[in-house]
Image (tube, rainbow, N blue to C red):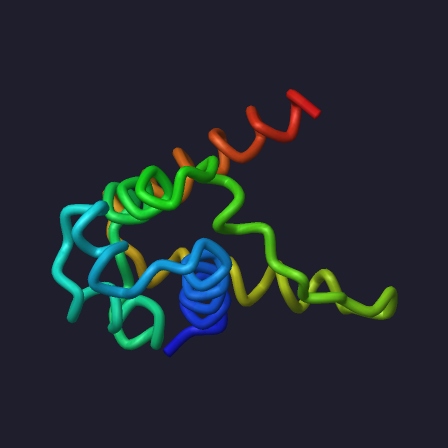
Amino acid sequence: MSEIALLLGNKIRELRKSKNMSQEELAFKASISPAHLGQIERATKNPTLDTIKQIADALEVPLHSLFLFNIGYAKSVDESAIIKKINIQLSTMTEKQQKEILRLIRITKHFNSLN
């Protein structure tokens, strides 16, 4: 399981619990199975962007808020190492997956420009 999948799953669980929703309730509202939601929260399955959007809508939060993680990077983070890891990960993806990532970046950039 990847770090991003863990962070996303934890964020979804955190938001779900803050709204006093069960997995079954959120899954129903998001039109996915409770088992699938559980797998996403445990980071054993990677959801599609469409599924992430359905979950955000069901939680009544903006899509980008699911990606606002409290990571707390130190100032000494080696950004070049992070960029290398991103490039390696992107190189293993299909063109369709890369386009989905680009779409997500554009959405995030748009929401950041609103602030």
